[in-house]
Structure formats: C-alpha cells, structure tokens
Image (cartoon, rainbow, N blue to C red; front, side, top):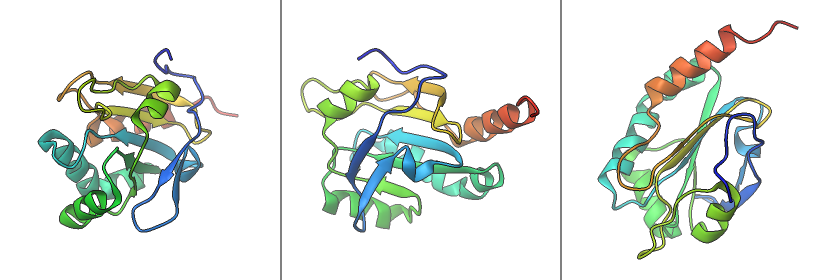
Amino acid sequence: MPLLKPGDIFPAIAVPQVGGGRLSLPETVAGSYGVVLFYRGSWCPYCNAQLRAFQRASGSLAEVGAKAAALSVDDEATSAGLVSKHGLTFAMGHSADAAAVSALTGAFVDPERGYLQSTGFVLDPSGRIVVSVYSSGAIGRLVPEDVVGLVRYVREHAPTP
C-alpha cells in the first residue's frame, strides 16, 4: 500500500475500543477535524509523551473542532492500563492487526516485534486527509500544537461557499 497523502479518503478501520464497543475510523471523528494516532505500544516513552500531550491539549483541540483517536496492537488490559495511568479521555483502540492496518494506510510495522510504528493523520470533517506523518522508528510524530495551528489555518483559508 502506498502512503496516504493529502486529499485521500481515510480508509475504514475498526478495532476493539477500550471500555467496550468498536473504534471505527474515520466514523469516530467524522464531522470534526480528526486526529488519528497509531502508537507503538504502552512501553514506548515517546508514545506515552505524545498521548499525554494530546490529552493536555484536549481543550485547544475542542476549540478548533478537532477530536483525537488512537490505536495500537496492545491488548485490552495493557491499553486500559495506559488510559487509566494518563487519564486519557479520547477514543482508544486496542488489539489492532498491524499487517491489516499497514495494508490500508501504509503505516510501517516493526519487522521483529510486529507493532505499528508511530503514524499520525489529520482528517477534515469529511474524512479526507489533510496531512499524514509516517515514522519508521521511535521519533517523528504529530504534536498537538501543530495540529491546532494547522486546523486553524485550514479553517481560516477554506473557500467560502
């Protein structure tokens, strides 16, 4: 699968959601600007920092009409522990099939341990990709301040009907 680029429609992905039900993308963030984060796992300090940063920025994201959702290959208990540890309030998926997600999105998969590398997407309210950020290793990921600035810019420069 080639990498997803601006203008592409984000593919349908559904995984179990922490707390029950399904995390269905892009539906979970539809109607808002969406931030979709694939994180390596609860063991990754960079991922923990990114998820905490998006939680801290929840007010700023809400102000610009953006919602976040994240997923990983971690099992339900591990994912629930991460949500509890950091007080995460955005939708969190678990038990993702890394190969299937990679086939749909182009996300890199660690060849030895089989987890998804950090990948982030900003979607417009219709589910089209505004920006995609792919990492092949531990660093290189979306940060909430950039997302808020990008959404503000896109909204201010949108064509008027």
